[in-house]
Image 1: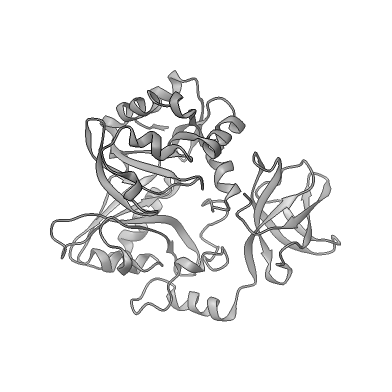
Image 2 (image 1 turned 180 degrees about the horizontal axis):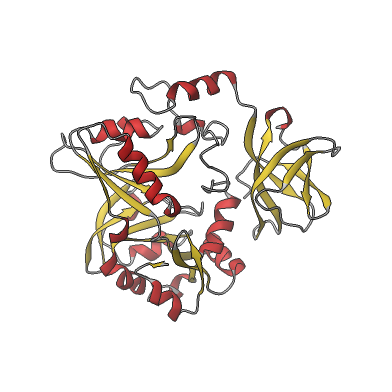
Length: 366
């Protein structure tokens, strides 16, 4: 297994470590409940250095990024980021990602950073390279970078103690280059996967441990705690954020996944599966990703079948599920036949040997 630059710190803190996407990662330090509530009410710090970073440079960098992603790359000015996806030729999703437009002294030479999911780094890189018929280069620097997420309502105040960059002037989905303590050239990005606000810090591996320590030196002041992948999953699910491999995959369309807003089919520029997505937007799709809340104590898991209220028809499948710390009840997401998609509609989910009652509720749940 690969190890992030913060691996020793996690072991020293007594984190429970697991294998995830080829990396040894912390899943929990104290409890998922405690870490989840710390992020919702105060702040938490995550090591998400397993994520991948590709750098696209050259005369046609913009053209390449636009061809392989679905969002409008033209809207990206230096310092801005956008959520997008890499579509395949059949309308499925190779991966979802964030595209960053980096600063460059020569504005004619555009430069982008693509942040992709850890499990898909090799697949994504090969996919982009396969379609790189442009005057552009793609470099995989995933092993050189660490990524630290500082999340929660007190995250900005916490991080501000260590940087002279005015974080209040960085809008959502924008970033600045700044310093954390003595360390310069840190990407301070107003993004995250928790729905509670905060920043993500892209740093070189050699300074990652020091930056983590600098932040933890002030953690008690903000009731902040280190958090693992367990809380990251419950936090994202309460907000209805998709997880690749569960809610998204090579066979799911972004239109089916409720991501039409990142698929700009009216662009003049071509991108992979653009015509297919335009057709899906016009004619509709047969299934869509939605959320639901259960009345029982049983937690729905990926692959569980969803049935109509009278239990006579199988109408979908669960993609993600968890016990919501905020609601105190199970929640989940899944693909359900379009003719059964009605807010507040009763459904049944087959868990174990029994059917359990649930109600369709569009995320976010909290």
